[in-house]
Figure 1 (cartoon, rainbow, N blue to C red):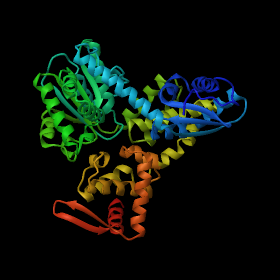
Figure 2: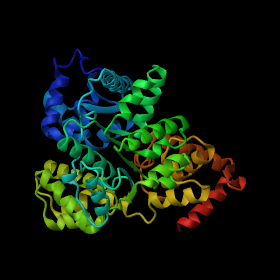
Figure 3: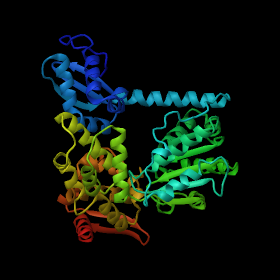
Figure 4: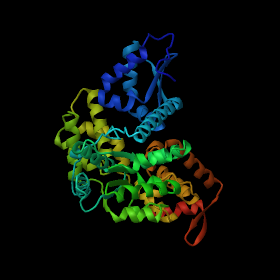
Length: 467
């Protein structure tokens, strides 16, 4: 699918015109985030096909921007047009290729002594924008201390907490503050998955020494989603040596994970011991006062006029992550724009009804994940990891199956919570249903050896625990 493909029945450059109309409707922030670099448009036989780089982006566009797409297309074409959204594998590969090419250029420049001052050019978050409260004040103070030029008492920081509580914000904020204070400082913000991919590519290209030089000479390494390293022995060993090299030179390493270092399954003891030797802090979900402050800050930045009673309603109704709060505000902003009306309490109650019915479910995904992890003897971080060990895979499938039975979460929502795509959840649920129909037994490894139980019995015990 290509943005330059033309339908012989469509006006010339109509797809570009649709893009411009869509950008006008959504505003630059939303358009740049979801459409500018990650989508392709094609008009064919009266149908507007929207291609996205991955299932998450495709699902988000379909559920949040379908109406705006249809209105933009009708504005340009002067007649209604059907919209279809799907994953464009070629586009995804193009984006990955550009990322690999950019990394290759960076590694080459580093090897030649021409590395740019900052090796992570795009930092979305700043520490001054972080809203603090009793749930995250310690983590914020620790992050602030890591930005000081002096070495301080500790040059290692490990931040852990559930999804969407601000860990990435703190890591990127540290990098941004270091960049502002010391423009020539060498730093890198990267996820553990990216670190793994770069390491594998370096091995394949026989450029391991270049890879090592690009990391081990950093003044600051900020690595997110450390739990992704679980069960990856070679990558763990390489990261251990990278960690040691940076630490021995008195430079700084900051990390973030969904779980405490000792709770990340299949992580080498040497890594765990080094992680806990620094400062380990937990970020809790925001308390009511912090949620209200976050909503007020978001409304100010978006220049959205919202009455205090509306903010208080959203803050009291949505008690999960910061991302849920921001998602609610994005939806209210869109509804207000569509209805050409201010954000009232009635609009908030009506517009967020579906979301609130899910977040206020008696059983949450976190409850299910904790119960399943304890039952199978794994950790919640294992369920989020890419490990394919049989016990971990069984626990992951069980959690996804129970989420579909016990909550109102959709396949994409479950996938996002577990760090997977929606097709993985669909396949897991289908497999569990077939096992139930065939009255099949589950086998998994425990400290006492292999354990076996009918799947129906497993689900019954877990349901009793959740009840």
